[in-house]
Image (tube, rainbow, N blue to C red; front, top):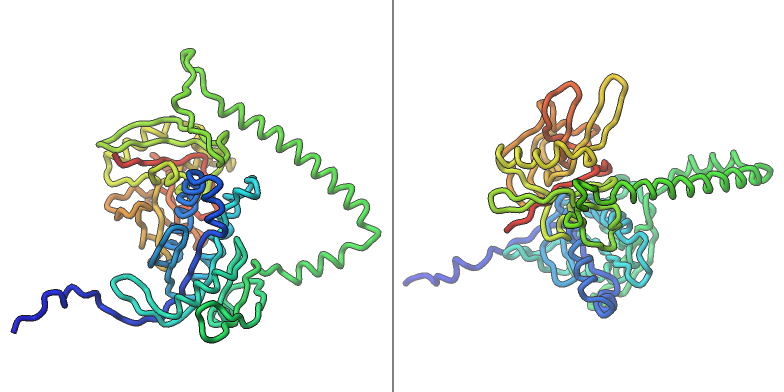
Length: 405
């Protein structure tokens, strides 16, 4: 008797324990009704940030549908860390927007036993995460008691107990907690309050007013300098209007496309800016329809160098007296979390494997244990322009976007 050929095609079913992160956009239908195209564009931009951070913290996206995300992590600590960074990153994306246009995710996190079938996840653990997400505030995080117990003593957070919640379609009440932020240092706060008494308040307030005024004047002057610096250069009497990036809500005056070139069928754009983090650069690259450049050969590396080496405005320079450090634009290199340091787990953000390398001889070094993103760099005591690893909080004055043709 012959066996059923379809049986071998059935996906394997297995159980496992996982930390589950569920997220979706608060008021998504309302935002779509106000401006469908703008909301869709910004959702794509925000999803690039969330997807990058999920991968960076060792997570895997198990399912997406419209504005929702379901991701699994190997531990509750990873899931909560990722959620906090997502909300902090997206908060900066919303800065300066009118209240009615703010796009915020709600996030719920649970840990539980799930069924995995062909990459899909099933089970009550997922339902709990989704229901916790539904009671989270816009821009907030809600976690289960099991997650709360697992992160205790491992993360320093301010957490508020919300009581036992009777969530929709769940038989038993679920103890829920709201993550309200990173816990401040109570010892430091108390000592500062003891140093200030009522007699000191008036001179402190006067000094604070003066400082605020000076900062405002400084910010105005700096903004005028930035705007002047980004005016199209007059080269031979012709303004380079074709290199100006289309105006968007994301600080258009602080972005400029300096060069557009093609190499072996793909096109590349060199973007100048005044300080941008790797995750923000990757998000903007995705919003433009591309990704941070993926370099697969010496020839491609040489081509990219030809775009940046003579464009001084995309380099940050730090004079240390005995040497000058130069930090170049971001590229698509990113290191997966829990990889063997310092050289393990490096991939390109578009999914390409690292088949070609151009690190300086002592890089990547994971200095301080927090350097997981790639950029170009020049060292005063070494020749050439090569790759260097940098931390998530580092900023660059430029990034290179690659577009598939």
